[in-house]
Image (cartoon, rainbow, N blue to C red; front, side):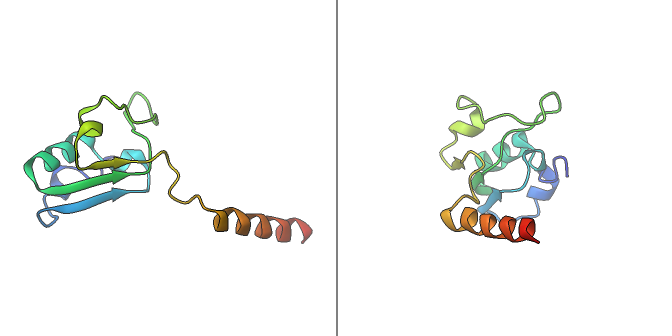
Length: 100
C-alpha cells in the first residue's frame, strides 16, 4: 500500500474530491496530494495518521510542511477512533476473554 494514492490514482477522482486517510501514512504520496490540492483536482485532504517517508516509517506531521500549511487540509494525531464508548466496550470484551 506504499503510495497507493498517487498522481495516477488521484487523477481518477472527480474534480474537487475530498481525500481522507484514516489508514496508514504510507498510503498517500504527499507530493501528489499537494499537487492535486493546488490544481483543484482534490478539494480537501484530511489525515488521522502520521507522515511516512522511506527513511522514517512514521513520524508526526511537520507543521511547517507545505501540505500542513495548505488551507484545505486537516490533521489529527491518530485519534479518530477514540471515544468513551470505544474504550468502555474494549474493557468489557477484554474482561470477558480473560474470564473465559
